Image (cartoon, rainbow, N blue to C red; front, side, top):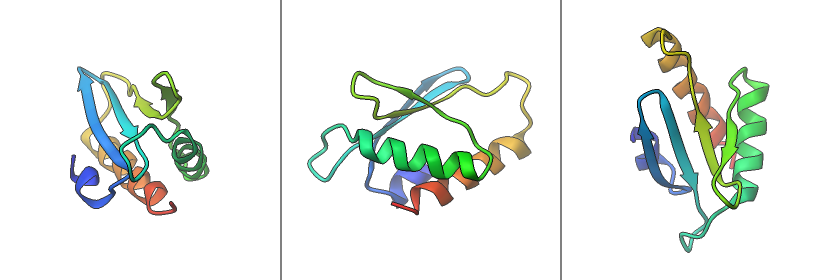
Length: 87
């Protein structure tokens, strides 16, 4: 949710358990599949893999291993922040 405060492209953050989704939207709050493509590519270049979700392919879905360390979660969120900053 801290990334949502920094990046207006994040419309919603939702999840249950280890599965989380970050909805990417345009300035009007509409689904933004192009933003997903750019962010997922930038994240992959930095070593973080995300998968698409949502009917418009505009949701970054993340499903880390249930035994992932806090350090790796922090690293993944840092990389995601760098990827979002490329928009």
